Image (tube, rainbow, N blue to C red):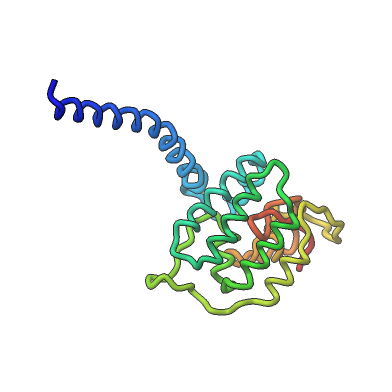
Length: 205
């Protein structure tokens, strides 16, 4: 066999081995990328929140990790990418550090206009910047940063509510301005609201 054919055979073998090793991971990546799209398909915001409340915690985390992966693919600043990467790593921990997550949220709020922040971290849909790659707004909200520090995580508080409506759509802590919900009463939930929907839904703010 000529040296040419030997070299060609070695190249073919190398390609086959690389492909056989790479395909399972690619398949897994493709499957993971489909989770959020499948969950959101043909659902209005209210239905998304209702279905989300019934998911296993691990699935909730997977959905948000996938959303963060979508953000990391955008041409954001180095600071944004670094903070989002750290946030993703925290979510993947067996016991996420909520204080660290809150700190990362505040750091992101310091460099992200409020409107864009809410689309990035208060909504599971894909986030898209303007056509020129810039944010949709320029307003950095100090109030948003303070709210992130003050809203409890996985907490239950007593309220004066006497009747109930849908879960987690009664106040700022619940829908974070999304779709203009203004219900005055709701069923309290321990999660599903605010930053990455990790905060509890309590009271009317």
